[in-house]
Figure 1 (cartoon, helix red, strand yellow):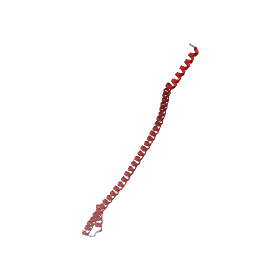
Figure 2 (figure 1 turned 180 degrees about the vertical axis):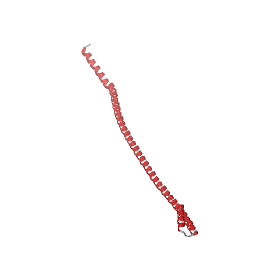
Figure 3 (figure 1 turned 90 degrees about the vertical axis):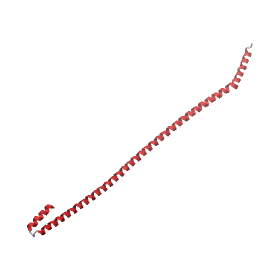
Figure 4 (figure 1 turned 135 degrees about the vertical axis):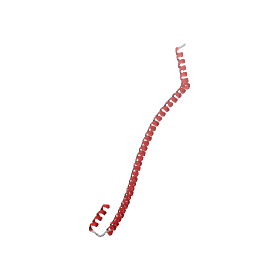
Length: 156
């Protein structure tokens, strides 16, 4: 055989092989490569979205925690204010009750003083009547009167 004919035959077989590979083998391989590239791109995009969503979720959690802390602080402050208010109300009630009790005790003491004065007046009046009676029974004598007045003073 001739070298030229072999070379031409090899070029023709090679051309048919290139045409066959380009027509039937290369398109499915390229399609699979494109699919794989698109899946990789989708995976990277999904990962990026996931990262973004995660960052947003972290921000949201931080905001919720800050809001929760603020609410707890506000509730504690309100509770402290209410406790102080209750203490002040109790103090004012206790002060008014103490004032009422003191006024009542003062009134009771005043009544007892008045009763004691009245009893003392009655006793003095009885002694005065008794002294006057004994003076009237005896004769009028300066010495006797002085003795009787001394005795009355000692009785008082």
